Length: 337
Image (tube, helix red, strand yellow):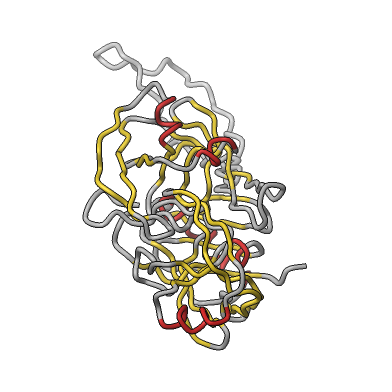
């Protein structure tokens, strides 16, 4: 399921541990008692001891556990437990979203905050949906802590998501704070924050990325685009962890060519509803050194952010780890076992 990715011209759609060394001081030398009392200042006040500077406190670890609902759907989108405005819910970790989003049904259950119209957004299927802005609502992710929700957008979603307890999406690229990076590791099933220095060490330890990742778009936190090869043709795909399946725009040249190979249909759940779309079975897709065969959905309209020919969904990304720094992103993918 893909939440809004762009709001054209309007309001739009591991652990962080600082090791402290114990600073042990040498035992003080014995003090020789004075032969006569020390003179007291004329003011009658005693000299105050010089206070030592406080040691910096380590930041609390910010690590959220990721869950999957594989019993409900294949290649489930990643989910985290959260509390929004005092209401417990689950949120989809969605790299296809440029903003954090809360579902309309959940927004109506929240006793705090004010909702204001904020224009329209475009969903995964290319449909336009109405969006509002929710002000003054706190959001925290279990294990990760408080999240800056400025702005927090609201839109109506299919009732199927409410029945599954899914109340919105978190945009991981919108979680990045200055001096930190966000690591989305599906193998370890964690969403975590790292200091920039630790992120650099992580990159050095893991080695080169499986494929080149770039940020695209200037709305919200933007989207992440990866270089791909689809049936031998070079292409660009938007990383969309909110979508269970990978897809191509049927209107673009590559989608038109592969459309001749379509067989059967697939069901997609987007913000605008449930859609049946044609499918190209067993397409060979490579993200640099990582390759897999997936059933590609053919979307009737072009992606809302014209940065790519389609989307790389969780059927491709389930064994990957994504490091988001805000400057240079890294993607590592391992073969499926």
